[in-house]
Length: 434
Image 1 (tube, rainbow, N blue to C red):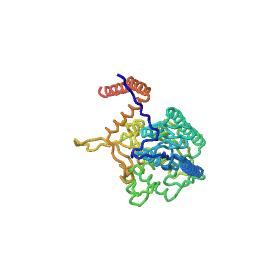
Image 2 (tube, one colour):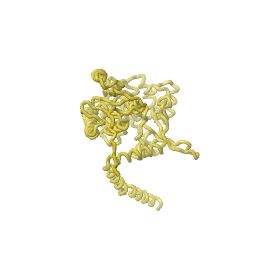
Image 3 (spheres, rainbow, N blue to C red):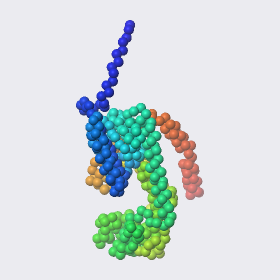
Image 4 (cartoon, rainbow, N blue to C red):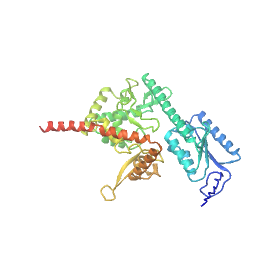
């Protein structure tokens, strides 16, 4: 039996259009971005827009699908770029066939983001052309080159961050004021970087310390300030006890400056933590005129720490921060796609059979729905499934991930720190009983 195979040649007529319309012209969109709002950068931004508009219009095989541009926006996190996300959405809707951009660093400066969106666009048959690197992501070798070069772009971000940190550290070592934006009781001149007392606001600070030394708590003092019509450092009428205590423990009121109270974990997520010794701090004594005497300030700290000890809140600062920022698997790892705030874990219907765990935008839950109107609660089960599927795809693409994961698991299993802690607690308990 003779079997004949007839080959039906593929037609190279361009990308498939989801809306079932045959288009002879390739719909090309351009993406532009500048990372700061300086005059020179904004001029560069306008030049990019003009350049790509003319480039696309002058190509007889292309038609302009739009110019997408983000001004004064960082490239390290894609979700904070409004026009970039609109571009991705339009590509998924089948409105664009190709994206053209200046370079990988303009598209994204995070390797994972770059590969994530390039692959997403590739699934929708949308190619990205990077002019400087001469890469077309729809070609066979495009992704390999992209992986290498986007890693270089991310390394550039990390190197820049390291240089900036080093520069700031050198300035702080010389006693230069870094990162100070002013506080209640003081006026700050950013030109001369000098701090001077604001006598009207200083009265509020002196009143807070006076009442605190007389034995009143933060809540009581806050209510008194509200009754007297004083505004908070942020210009609000409502005084919380944390605002009052923040003033009580601020070393600036005795004329000192402590820099380096927080530190950035990494330049990609830009997540910051309170500095409990992980990074250097810089203390400058007698930097400016004091509002409160050192004697009264030290007395106030003794009262504050004694009250804190009674509430068992300062026994272990590291453990406290770990509890707040790493309590659950996704703590500090999820961001709201609309406003960029962290998502927090919340339990709904706690005392009923309908109990479920959701993650919600902190801005929406704390400040009100109007501050992030589009955010919705996401069930933890859905996040877990999405994470597992993402990890599965990552492992499929790179088998070394599994080896690294198994190594971490083995190290955790072999870690006997908890056993030692348990033994220590048992010994302490036996001493108390005996």
